[in-house]
Image (tube, rainbow, N blue to C red; front, top):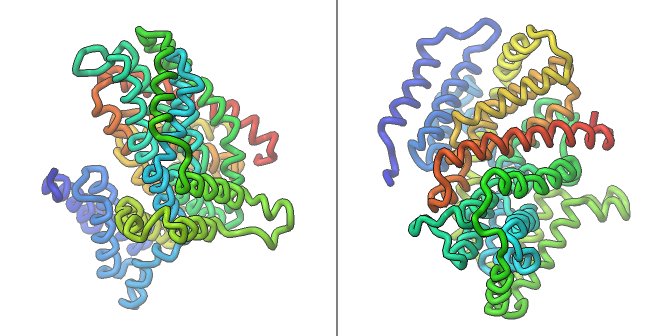
Length: 487
C-alpha cells in the first residue's frame, strides 16, 4: 500500500485552492472563515481519498492552519496556539485512553472468553449464535472505543472460527451454509453498539463536543445520559437485527449443537480466569460505575468524577498491576493516531464555528428544509435522512461527522426542533449509518474482505438494516426520550 497517493492528493489540494482563490466569499462570511473552510474541505477530501494515513494528514492540516494564520491573522504565536488547541480537549484524551485500556481485552484474552461464553450459552441454533455474537459485542462495547478493533479484531476471528468449524468458507463455496449469515450479524451489530455508548466508537466524543459548542455548553451530554438515551432503542435494534438478517439471508444450517461444544472446548483450552483477566474485569466494572456517575447518585455531586479522569484511573491501575506495560501503551498506535487526528479535526470544527461559518451554512440548510412547510418532526426526519444517507459518499464516519454534524444540528435548532431531541437523533444516525456500505467504517473492509458476503448482498442488507435501525431510533427512541423528559 502506497504511503502517499498523488492523484487523491492533487484532487484535495485543487479543491482547497479553488475554494481559497477562485470561489468568491459568500455574503455574510468573513474571509478567514472561508479560508479555514478551504483547508478543512481539502483535509476531508484527502481523508476520503485515503491520500495518506489520517494522522499524517492531521499533522499537515495543523501545520497549514498555523502557517496561514487563518484563525489569528494578527499573531503568529496565537495561530500556532490555535492550531494545537485540539490537544487540550479532555474528550480527545478520553477516547485515546479508552483505546489503550481496551488493549487489555485482547492481551488478556478476556474479549475472546466473553465471546465464547455467549456462544456456549446460546449456540445450539444458528440464530442463537447470531444473538451470542451480538450480545458479546454489546458487552465489550463500553470500553472498546475502536469499533474496528471490537468488530474486526475481536469478534470477527471468533465468527470465522465458528464458521470454519462447520465447514463454511468462501474458498470452498459454502459461505451460505452459515458463514454469510454470521458475517452479516458480526458487522451489523457494530453500528448498533457504537451508537449506544460515548466510549463505543471514536467519533462519539466529538459529537458531544460539537453539541456543547452549538449550545454554548447549555447541553453537555454525559456518559450516563447518552447510555440511557440509547438503551431502549439500542436493545430493540439488537433484538431485531439477527432475526431480520435470518429471514432475509437464511443460513442453510439451522441447528448447530456442535457450536456450543466448540465454544466450551475453546474456554477449556483457555483455562480458568487468570490474575490479569480478573483485574481487567475489576477495572471494567470500576469504569462503568464511575462513568455512570453512581457515586455521585449515592453520595452527592461532590463525588462526581470527570470521565477523562476515570479513564486515567483505569489505565493507571492496569499499569500498576502490570496487566499493561508502558511498552504496550507505546505500541498502541491506534490510540496515539486517534489523539492526533481528533485534535486536528476538533480544532478546525471548533474554529469554523467561532468564525461564523457553521452558522452561515446551517442557515442555508434551514432555508431549504423550511421551504417544504413541514412540522418540526417532519423537518427532523428530513434532516436526519439527508445526513444519514450522505454517508454513501464517505469512507470515514469521523470525516462525515466533522463535515456535517454541527451544521445539521444548528439547522435543526434554528428550525425549532427540540435541541436535545435532534442532537440525540443525529448522534444515533452518526453510528447507524455505518451499516450502508462495505467501506462505511474500518470494520467493514475487514469483514467484507473475508469473502463470506457478496457485494450486492452487502449493500442490500445495509440498506434494509439502515431502514430498520432508523425506524427503531425514530420510533422507539422518540417515545423513550419523551418518557425521559429529553423533549
